[in-house]
Length: 319
Image (cartoon, rainbow, N blue to C red):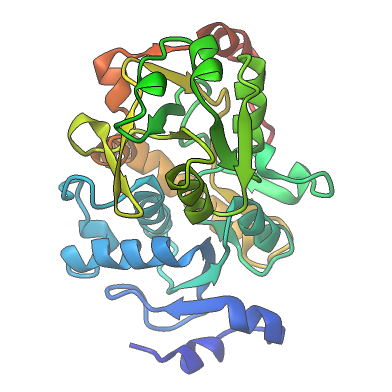
């Protein structure tokens, strides 16, 4: 296995010092041990979880199956597996380098400027800020189609007022929700539903600490694969409000840089690999393993279903 120094020598052009500080390199067992790495955005928890998943399957992303322990890994970790596996199946047999990004907006920034070549998780165009242009990115075919990205309302199990809610109006009266500062689509959708009692915080740990401190009451999150779709965050149990959810009314994609010298080649490999993974049912199975579709199986009510139905008629983002 190559050392980080050896991998860095494979770059055609030197990275700026600030980028070198942000990059955590890893050579995956089973991948080609030569060639320039494919730079993918991720935060440290995703990197750690991804590596742990690979370690369960001999370090080979092509050997990973959906047989993952309940509650151990979330969606973002398995999406990194999907990305790397898709690249392999698309013919790109190269090492992976991680460009660390603290949140989705930072991840897109790294891809747009070409420090990374693609995002390691599926995102929607609303994550771009006002200065950014969707035309600077290639968008993969949808990983999650419009209307299928659902979130539940999580709160502490002793919060009976929130747990009794059965509508958006009930939630707005029952307590204060909290979302990330870059969760623009969550904010827009919730406000369109009539939920205005919202706070914001910059990082995910801050969001949970706000709830534990009593400064917020619930947080929108995807379902987990724990019994009852419960989550344990910051050492405390969180439970979903039963029977209700909302859709973010978006399709989600992996985003690839147009300015990176490898952007076109990575995009072509990614697209080919995703088509094969979709044919195999691997993408659906891996997301199922995280509990992502559990509320579908249970038939929970989508509170903004009318808005979803209206939006589905709109054209998908252009490549």
